[in-house]
Image (cartoon, rainbow, N blue to C red; front, side, top):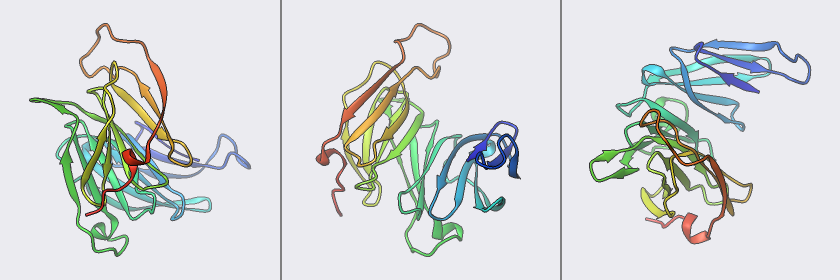
Length: 219
């Protein structure tokens, strides 16, 4: 297991043989705001304060910081996810943008693709944070959830929007596809982007997803 926190550290744990004792620790350049794991490559990506993106190589009972760079987005990162093939990461910021960065451009792989960013979760002139990103394990497309209460699916490889689900009562705090991508768990929970106020109750929805809502459109 891997954990990261506001103490600016990443810990690696082996609960099977050494419960409660970190087997490796890596110092981060700031507070950890989001994290994801690429199991196939034994890598962890962490988004920290100061708009830093860190990649940590995790081996048996060891960990090494192999990348520390500034995010391509201009505002604080709220969420970060690896693409299913591990060749790219998707970042969501508090300023209603998502960036896709291919790892060859940051010196970790060789695929030759170019990074890009796009605007999302905006209503008129009002910009909402992107709280979460979830990848469909079947199609490789992804869904974003924002403080505008909407969930949108995207074809990142071909830079196209797929669909917008009907609006929920309040912010989308978390998303997760099931193992075959046929259902999406959606946490509708106010995330205090407008401070303390009356708000709808927290709810979790399980929504069946049509292939047409998640299948890539092609170029």
